[in-house]
View 1: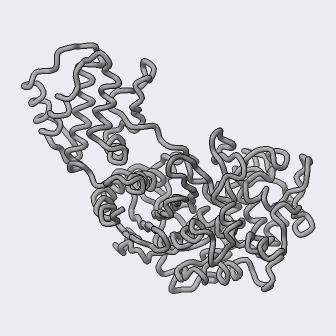
View 2 (view 1 turned 120 degrees about the vertical axis):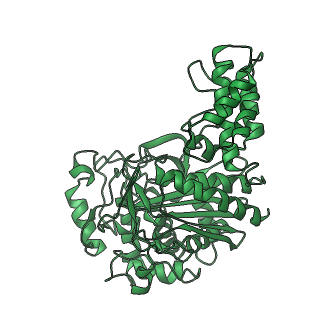
View 3 (view 1 turned 45 degrees about the vertical axis):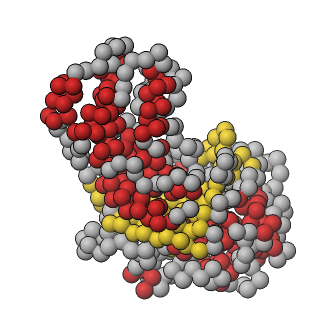
Length: 502
């Protein structure tokens, strides 16, 4: 795989992705084998000053740091301090009132402790020490989401279903703090035994992203986060999660990629091959923020996906201004990490909102490259977009209505020349697209085949969104009434686990 083709593709696609999603800045790292092979940054880290986003810009990881906490706990398993399937109650009194059996470390790392969903227990001031915070939360027995009125604190018996829990991962962090043989805080253990061995010099896991807990030089490199709505970017005041082992880390994509590569390559120097393998292979059925989902699996913290090129995934958000995305191909030994200083306010809890969508569109490019395809566009993006618009218009004027004759060349030329468009436009590509569509014996299948032939999926993903038709499908068996002409394959399952605030 030639990494230069991926770099060219990113330089072409990413500015348009950011424009489409309203993303101020984006930083990307791709690791291959044992090294970070590519790092790119686009846009700005701060809109007020114009400070550019760089590959050294630091950003909150949100929940994407949960695997750090998982590795820290598994290091204690390696040392024989605690067992994966040993009850945690002798160390931290966390008792599921639904009974069945005690909670184990494995339950916490696979989100199957029975603890329900929570937002991360945020506040406007840094949290107290972790033990004190958890005592308060567990004694209250109340989710912080909408003041405890939205979801139960305990969602069910231990081990019966996936339920993403920030409190559960905070408990894991507390176990690390209580049981580590150095007798240091959770933050110091992770710094010594995860970040330092991997050379992650721009990464910290503080109690709070606050001057009292983060070196001034590193905090100065942090991007400004923006809460966004269409046409609106708001720099909201800082917030701090009490469940901080679930989401308070700061890092760069390159640093985080080094961590993911270490796990993909068997664990050294931070974890044994046996435990690293358990992190990236299915341990239990998984899910999303909304709960268990058929077909999804979870390893230890990471979500696990199969297929010809199996991969792991996670993701994160930090309110209200940042998103983070990770994908790691387990057999190809490739890691992708993306950081954006954007958190969209308009679509709570869904991975298709702009901050996530920007990362997922970039991931389409990298996925194509991992699969051996050339990720560079086959034609200019203006031509590709105009061609797809032509296919749609051709469908509407012929196959959709069962009309055998194509529109006249004069009509098509007039449409192309008189179109009022807000994005760069290629009239000739539009005319070509219209001309590709005709009524055949199997028009749906033939239209879908034309799209697959002319517009690779990673290119189509952006173009279809830009034209406002992101849900198109290529499957010719689509039911009547379902969009089934020029099309995009259905979106893959969501791999980014809900972020720290959820």
